[in-house]
Image 1: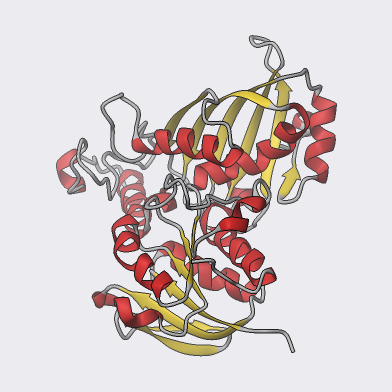
Image 2: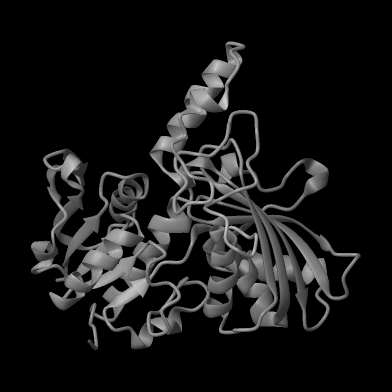
Length: 355
């Protein structure tokens, strides 16, 4: 009989936690027992999974006894506080926050790109940032064939990446604008310090607008999100000095991020070769026939696990350069699905830790 596993989902009532439960069921992960954990305000809520109702318990350090796999999606501060306790109690943690991504001995894994990084885990694996995952799934086949030497990316990120409150903000503002009511900064009640540690809900009107800020600004004038892409890309590809630059913007889209990506490779690559590589690549769907109006759209990427890639063309301003347009569901492949794919790889190795 196929072995089954006791699974904990931390942050079970949030946008990503909800998606994790949906993907666990859809991919038929071998769940024996399910522990749903969240903050005190969600304690007692009932959540349906695989035809049964489960009650949410309050997140506590002692909640991980008997758990094999713990899927964390409750923010960096919660992960820092509770993930070590889960590992100590014998669980293997897959963490969706930024807490451990750049910790040297913690694997940062995209299964289609660097599954070998899991070999020497110590009970804790980090799930990369959604924008990084979506970009690298598209770039990995090209990198493996021709070695990428430079990356520039501009992201157009959906509001769901900022959580359920940001989704509500887009809905509320859209209704008001469509009723021809003026939206002022004071009326938004953003409650965010633009130079502080957190941004949420969004720092400006998002309805019919674009905000050139995702996460907080740093001293180098980049945002934290932009620097996540830089650092995580280098770590995942194993190239500490790879030139990577990013600009991240929030757009009035509910689900799925889009990215314009400029790359340079060690040798020239024709568009036709890139097409061949991407057609064969796991986790990628090639959508590239502009003459017929076929190119990746966030509305098409939403709800699926594949990353959509198209608008591939030579970069006439750069030797050995290509330009791509990429779309991916930030809640699924950018978060929940990637985490569960990691768990599936662990299951293949019997979910062991060398801690």
